[in-house]
Length: 402
Image (cartoon, rainbow, N blue to C red; front, side):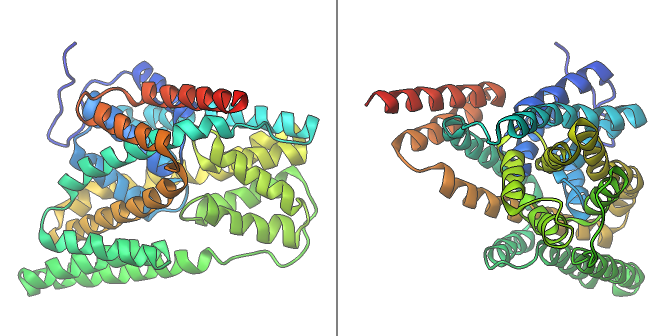
């Protein structure tokens, strides 16, 4: 099969809507493990296997996705769809990644409401998690080789990992990496030429970072009566201001839905977070589960629309700005710093996931074999995930008979 030709912007010229839809439907159905794993799988598919984007273009999108609130892996799907097929691709990429996960979560929610408990699927993730660690590691290796262009960016990445391990806010790590890299570029070149761009970059980054930081503390103090409109507006707010993982989402949900409004109990909230973590696709489908528990299928659809709608809008707004960032040496350096900081955060997340996933000899073996199959033989990650699930089932069954 002929490889798609890429133009100077680093985007494949020929990508059909059906190819785009099929890829993200498959990823939305099989991409377990949270944003880091999702992004790793996207990199494998759209950069290495299909060559729809260059690695440099993919990393620019990754940096931009981390700069805006909302689920970063979903925003990557939207970005990729938009670059490949315009507005139709924007909608198709995002919806095809979200809808399979939403349907699966609705199935869990239906069982939860009907039987009052969640299915036990620990055996499934026993085998899948080690495979995901290998997939993320492979993506980090590939992306890092391109992102770390010099020793300065390498040192910036190491500093980002240290700060993340120390628990520093992710916005501080991201914007700090971008501002330091941009400032270094501005000061090392013609200062008079770059001074204006440097001041604009620092002011914009500071204002946006401060606004996003304080926005994440917004909470409603009064009691709000439940209804579909308040449900939609709440998740619209959450999707517009929340950065980070499902654990950041947990703080928002607990503050309003449990503590202030009493729509949910703590137990229901933790079950919702658990479903978002163990099902494929975006972790933010936690909102789908909550919506179903509160108001059935209409609630699930309304909550899902609310939390994901801002991502489509933000991607459409910010995408035209990315090429302009690259036209300025200082702004391009800012984006380089954000990209390296994003990979640093991804590496720290992988470390924490690995501590939970690699717990005995079988899981150690799964990581090693998966890494070899990925990096040496370039086996499709889908088969590795399915193989990990089968091995998890076999180990579970063997344990029952011992």
